[in-house]
Amino acid sequence: MRFRTALFVGFVAAVAVASVGTVASGAATVDAPSDQTSEPVADEHLPDPETDRLGWENGVWYNESIDVTPEDGLNETELDAVVARGMARVEYVRGLEFEETPPVAVISRDEFREEAGSLYGNVTASQRIAENVYYEALLMVDESTDAVGVQESNTAGGVGGYYDPANGEIKIVSENTTTPQMDEITLSQELFHALQDQKFNISSYPSETTENVNARNGIIEGDGNYVDYLYQQSCENEWEGECIMPEESSVPSDFDPHLGLYQIQLQPYSDGPAFVSDLHEQEGWEAVNEVYENPPASTEQMIHPDKYGEDTPTTVTVEDTSGEDWRPLDVENGTDYESFGEAGLYVTLWYPGYEILSEGGDEDDIIIPYRNHLNPAAGGLDEQDPYNYDYRYTAGWDGDRLVPYVTDESFETNETGYVYELVWDSENDAAEFLEGYQQLLDYRGAQPVPDNESTYRIPDDARFGDAFYVQQDGTTVTIVNAPTVEDLSAIRAGAAPPNETTPGETTTEGTTPGETMTEKTTEETMTDEATGATTTDEMTDGETTGASGTTETTTETSDGFGPGFGVLAAVFAAVSTALVASRRL
Image (cartoon, rainbow, N blue to C red; front, side):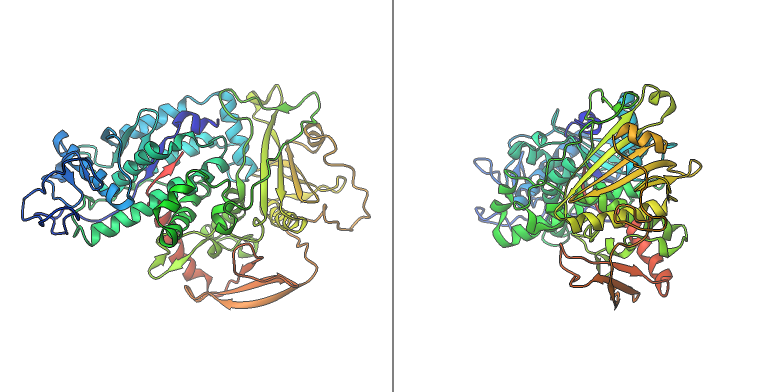
């Protein structure tokens, strides 16, 4: 089990959500449940049912007013009432009955930072070096940066609450350290996670890799965020605003996440709710419940819903052919490999575009257009599915496995390597990923090594200074990384072979970084309706654009991008830190 899931063991966390609203005064005026004969009047509670039922918990109906003053923090009696009504409302919205009441506490941001610090502080040396290798392999976190520290910062600053199935406890994080306050929408998310665990035993799902976690979260967080959406709609309509939603933002003002790592984790929170919403609207809650018996096997199945239950991913193995100086890393109390899946690989190739445009860089270096990641809607991004993770470079994924390599000195020198094998549905899919990956190497400053085939070198004084061997063999792409060109073959026998091609000749395996491998393209210019910017689609003969699974390439032009990017960047940053009602770590 990866260290994150081992330490947080099913830990379900809610990203801090900025929301506006106060508790309405007086009694609710919504309809009474169907088996009641009268509607409530001011300050009158509905009669308790003879037996427990949906929409009633611990003496409180889902549409009752409760006597609380949240502005000065909730005392024990008030908290019990808020939790009881929250449970009743989750039952009413989702149609599932709680089996028991989970304990709930409200804690300050400082308290949560201490908890997160102690959890991440227990990482073993081998776990830490493994995490560094994994995110260095995505060319997102360089060797001089502690990847564990980056993840801790993302967690400590952005979590608004969590449910821990190890003890069944819920904690809600408040920015108000003097009188910590409740956010009812965050509470509803964590209550629903407790309900999921009682009904579907979600903590038993695989959690060894990032891909495992994101795949299972397609249903866990997809269902949770869809329930949150329905809950909030009820708050604004039939419950007539009588929900506890503090006016102050629950997002820390100093929260500055690594958006690359963040966007990988956000994929199930974007694609999952749309998947659940469609299923619920077409077939009802029972069809959604059945998904828990056969949870998504990959992020691919959520990015392309037509592949759910149809396209089983390949289990990739990496044969160890290293020499005596290098060996696969043995991770103490953790998993000694990683998989990022289609979602992680998509963000890997998209993230440079965010860096480039944020820093005013050269738009010609963008690999996946920035806007390709955004699903625009009136006033911003699509409320239930704000992000798109589908692009031709990573569509056609079928499996991946990343294995770190070390020497006896690696724990002192931080010099490491890895073998990353990726399997694709077809040779063309593999070639398209290779095309995108070579552009990523080019963006990071890699240059071909003249004397070695399919070998590249990023200078040592650059952020990701290392040697790389990149090879396609049919439907498999293999990436080998090492501190030097000579170490490549010591990690993977046969890597970086002598270059026997004629000088100046380009082969598929030896394509210069950034150079396209398609022989002929046609261009089709389109206008972005949301921003007015012009984009250009490049398509090989016979290819089409549009639907999931098809080839689609867009190249941003410099004309019209500046103002549009500024607006979208602001929306993107706000939604990235506030849209998600929960995040499972």
